[in-house]
Length: 371
Length: 112
Image 1 (cartoon, rainbow over the protein chains, first blue to last red):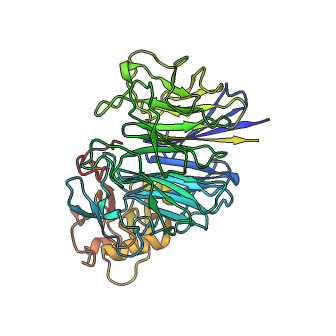
Image 2 (cartoon, helix red, strand yellow; image 1 turned 90 degrees about the vertical axis):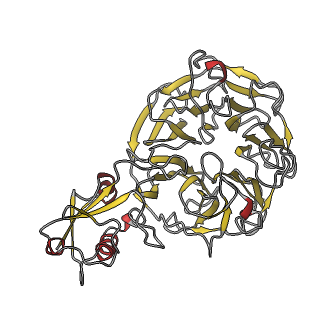
Image 3 (cartoon, rainbow over the protein chains, first blue to last red; image 1 turned 60 degrees about the horizontal axis):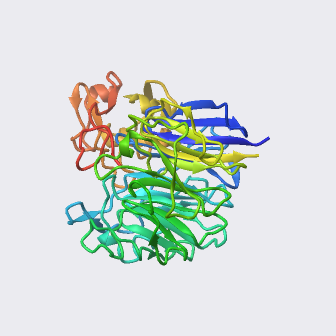
């Protein structure tokens, strides 16, 4: 019988939530790495027992942990993230040049085919790769070095590379997103990169349609339609039908088009999910109502999903990597909040229930569907 | 035999007790102790000082015989009591700290 494993990264440790295919009763394991920030953990699509975790604190820096038994036991692997060559400078908050400084790993993206190969998105923004199970990491310097790097600026959370998407139909194609630089694509396995931000419009930057400088919060793709991308930008929900070459807005009737996370239904490539958040400074749901919005038309037409979610006095946030889907039928949707709740829907969003209510602030949620 | 006391998080990471004992050759300095510590416990690499520059991490402090050695040159000889093992060399995580955000220095959280 199928099982589901939900990997939750929080401000103070990692938690692993497991259930059978009914997704009604859950076992909770953790905290793993208690007291450490776990920005992200993710399992290998090629070996479900292989899981990687990004563990960090401001005190002791970055660690990478690896499990080969589905998260029961862990071992620290390599944590040396050295930029290739002389790192150079990007723009600081005040526009002055600032040297590239490694701070942490925001996102780990295991290869679709090789459990020992993993990509890491880091702050200050760069992409690294390991081919030996995390023992050593090498930067793919073509991203920072393609030309626009000196013009990148940090967003409020730092200058982070937070999204990595591997194209299952084209091993050479990778998408990444950086706050606040924008989205980028490589078609040659990471050797060369180009910005893919045409069509984005950001009123808060000097040139609203600049090639780089956009605060992209997250990007999602359905594996069956790898040229179709969905983006939650600082403001605006966007869509591209040509691998990011051009974007158009699909915010439609959302109550606010600000938010952090976005994801796609596992079996319906035109069904997408966002959690609208009030901004620029509040960062909580409008009207104190925690609502997931679903579009079954690939954007523009959105419906609120509220059953089982708090509809009054709710002031949590849902961060960019804190939503995921399983691949069961029907599709399960999961998201975590800064209030420590992890909500799940076993029916594509129609009904929700908390798996767990009182974790530390949730930074990331990933799901493994186990056969 | 040099005695080193680690903060709790690093004891867990290195899978050791509250105090570790190290054989350190030559002059007993902060650098020599950290080199020996990282050699014996490779998982501590990068947690106390930068992998490449060997700069002390900002919220890690070193104490010897009641004195703060965090800002002393790493090659300066430590007191005889440390070299003889009479006193432990203390690695301490700063009580305040944990954030490297430019606008939140000294606070213990980050925003997105």
